[in-house]
Amino acid sequence: MPKTKTQDKKIGSTLIVGGGIGGMQAALDLAASGIKVYLVDSKPSIGGVMAQLDKTFPTNDCAMCTMAPRLVEVGRHKDIEVITLADIESIKGTAGNFTLKLKKRARFIDEEKCTGCGLCVANCPVHNIIYITPEKDEIEISDEHLKIMNKIFAEYKETEGALVPILQKANDTFNYLPEPVLRYTADKLNMPLSVVCRIATFYKSFSLEPRGKHIISVCLGTACHVKGAGRVTAAIESELGIRRGKTTKDMKFTLETVRCIGCCGLAPVLKVGEEVHGLMSKTMVPELLHSYDGAS
Image (cartoon, rainbow, N blue to C red; front, side, top):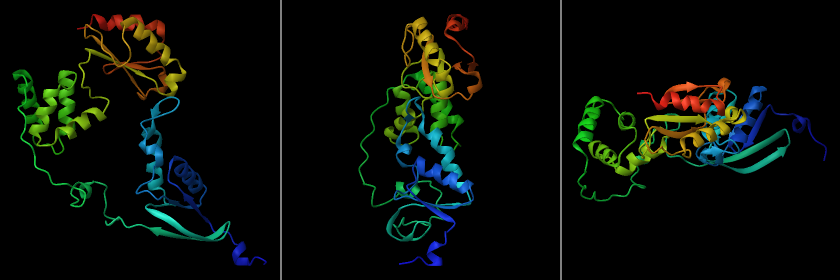
């Protein structure tokens, strides 16, 4: 059967099935060429498997750091329309000129008004299970720690969502987050200890273990990795006699590794506290450590 003129006509739009990192990049490339793009995913949001990852092979770069810029660009691009919670029911037509039928599942919210705050999930009567709050255990916290924490709470008593700032202040004060401090924080803010611990363990800037006076953070991002950050790390481990993530017995140094400091032009880079040291080499390590070993 010969094709009609209508069938030969190409439509100036593209459908991409799957909103993973590959789908997002393809959508951005096509939209940059002036083509209207429909990005369809069966999940409630785009991002795919990469959104579930912490690090990526082989440099252990942050997966979200790779994906976040693309998420922002896709959301802002005028020629990209994201359709989530949708399944393909049928496709009719030929390559370049086809009609697609989608079945879009209900979200039970007004998508135009949704800000992603998550309050609807937290207060959903279907998913929430009513339970009786057990009696609170007595918190064994020293008078010194109690005095410091009460001063911190007084500083942030008017701050909405003060959990993170309070933990930051406590972490800076004690150089880590002692268990009694976490328990006292949960009690004062009237929230489950599990929520406080979840925040405390999520952010790398927080520590549940005592850390040294000087925290050495060696960047192992792509640029620093290529420039020899691994050799610098090995030299520090040899000089201090500890492995990464550990603290010296005299509590002077803690060695940590990070994925980006934001100084790729000075690679390899490390930080001691808030001081940045660029263009490092393993031969520079002894002198650097010595300069902090006797510092007050």
